[in-house]
Length: 332
Image (cartoon, rainbow, N blue to C red; front, side):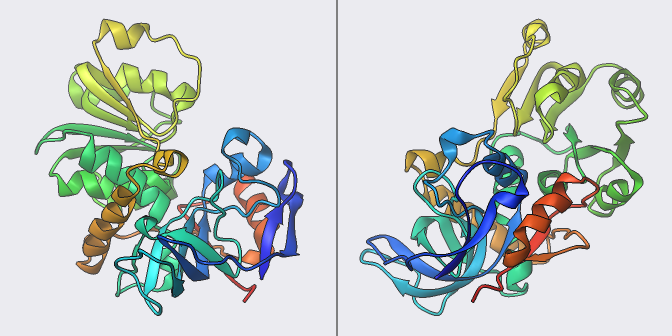
């Protein structure tokens, strides 16, 4: 089968078209004819060598988001059958190859039947960002009606899904964004207050919206050095959730304010081969929300074919993207 692979770390140009053996089904796994995927920052980091411990063996097939059609099933597959339209978060790391190929061999527990009211291209945008936001807001935020939640990066992939989940919990949502276009997205999805973090510092919006007391919950989808801003923004004994804590920081504020810091790292079921059914369960809950019209996703104005993955990475790294970048399989 044809696949876009990398054989070394580097810039976008390391991608190349290759002919590799079609995967054979094995117990618990299904073979999916891939129709679409989408681009995430995680794949940029893998390709560039920032996360070598998570890389599949070369020649490596990246991309964790997938939508497609099941064409074969292995022994012990309990739910899915040939012909089922599916979407899921399938790996593209360690020993689990990703979606940039004609076919993908996928653990059944990492998949769910595709929402019936959206196309394959849209379905493939949801898995990584949706599961990340779900685990943060629905499973771990402890939000109660009326609680104040600050979502950093609310116009991004994870952030704009998190805004919707927080509104489902009847929280008061404060969203930080970097420009007017992303502000419009956050407002359209229900954010009560939108803050441009480039023109408004933490102390200013902390005093304006909380009388200096801080937010009940802060969800930081930017992370790293921005975590300091999250610690400043959280109330005493508040909760800070983050998708990126790979940074050396002074935790004095965490101690002085008795904060709880919770990291969201959704690739653990892939890496540890444990609790994988949780992924499929979350996808199924999201499916219900999507079909009910309660959950939506924004797609960047530019999309790419799999054969154009070099250009897709260059486009992302140039900045200026809005929400998710769709990738369509033209290798079939």
